[in-house]
Image (cartoon, rainbow, N blue to C red):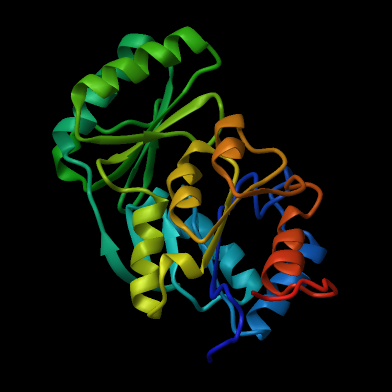
Length: 256
């Protein structure tokens, strides 16, 4: 289904963007996402979450479209059909785990089939396929030290999904690389994409697309990079994006 709108794809971060702080999609946001879909606009979840943590929300919205999960380490052709997956070297996982233990902070890691963390770790690192590693600490100094050590390791894409964490993907893998794959699948360009987010794991995609949008609750760096800042995730910022900038309902903007 083709549409005559300038933008053909809406790529939505989930936590802090699509979801309210209660981890729900508001009725108003859901209504406008459906209006976008009815207008022929593709809607793609673009999240740091693993697929099985993202899927229930996709199903709630009735999305059959591609999906970017684990910050771009996975791209799904449709909700249950994997298109591409990029793994982290288990040697790097081992080193990142050592860094976490050294700094005594909370950590987690996604393998292809499960989530591990400080309370439930695995000795046989080599026996698993790894997608992402993460650290959480309220201590800015410790977080900075971890960041420095990670940068020394090399071969990593380091972002966050909240100001107190660090998320690590393979170098070159981000929501931007993921959404670029989705564009190939849909036969559209990055210029025809609107991407919305709130954290550093959204930064690359916000900079790479036609219209990059920061939520009102976004981290400062993300706001600075965005073309547009809308209301927060608890105030239906996504509605603004769809209504005023994609469908341009009730606005008298004359198209150039």
